[in-house]
Length: 343
Ligand code: NAD
Ligand code: 89Y
Figure 1 (cartoon, helix red, strand yellow):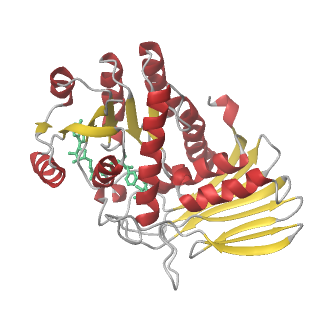
Figure 2 (figure 1 turned 30 degrees about the vertical axis):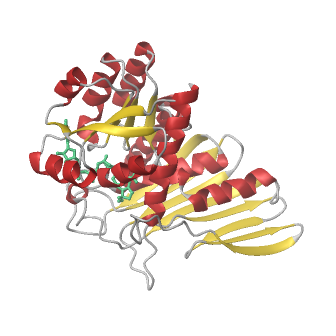
Figure 3 (figure 1 turned 180 degrees about the vertical axis):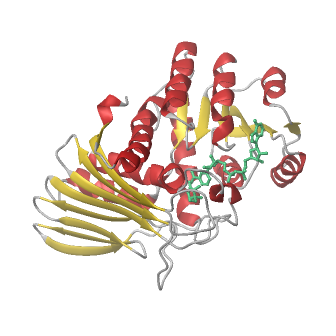
């Protein structure tokens, strides 16, 4: 079967990982790139040998025949670019955070649905191999019926040097990072019915919140705590590991720092190493995230070629995005927020 012809819009910090991913994957390749910054266009075009380069996305849609477009710009341009892809009938992947507001996100899902265009949000954290390993244990039934979860991301890593815009937005950790962690909670424990949140800013040099604690009721009856911090200085820096505790009727799962997975069930306790592989182009500590980029891109190719709905489709991501909106609203009001009121 012919390779899918893709184009990438936004050749910045994270897009380099996506370009490596596309180079590694069978069944798709990037034939054109776009960035309004000529220097980024040159750097990425030269690194990956892409000759067809555009500074304007509309010109790229007009000049190319594409099977999909991969949007790797920051959030402010996501809605116009997704709507442009829908208008051009080109299937689209959009980076997280999907949109600035839930209202924008709903409009983007509607535009793609009405155009009959597949839409996937690049919500890659659930594709990390340690997270998939936790999901496999849950699916095996070894710990019985889960009743409690803690999904935790606490770090002091300097994310601002690579992504300086993160220091300037009114919203920071929930919109940027917490969005992945609540998505992992949904992936492991199911959809959420209500959420209570508290936030804080510890770092005086940034505009948004860098600490967030969320208590969630899942429709399955599970209670979970999702806690995120970029103000936590530890002896051994865990970035970018998500740590997990799940208690079930028959046992427990613990994903601890260093990618150590401990499972206790009826048959006893086993401890395993679920470290992600270090891909040839990857670098520590980002290799965990980098591997998940390849996994989600493979999933997209599989879904597009078999006409399947991606796991993190636009419609699915509304349920993750609603948790972000609920967290900001609930932190401001100090009241629990019902998720069905937002969707
Ligand atoms: P960046 O600022 O380094 O890169 C964005 C690029 O997009 C820039 O080169 C900019 O010139 C270009 N751009 C912006 N608007 C454009 C437009 N309308 N047309 C053409 N080009 C345009 O940002 P980044 O750090 O690479 O982040 C990009 C996105 O990736 C963000 O949404 C961020 O949250 C996300 N991200 C995701 C992960 C993950 O694990 N999924 C990790 C890091 C960043
Ligand atoms: O932008 C963020 C993301 O999606 O993963 C980690 C990150 O790069 C910094 O918080």
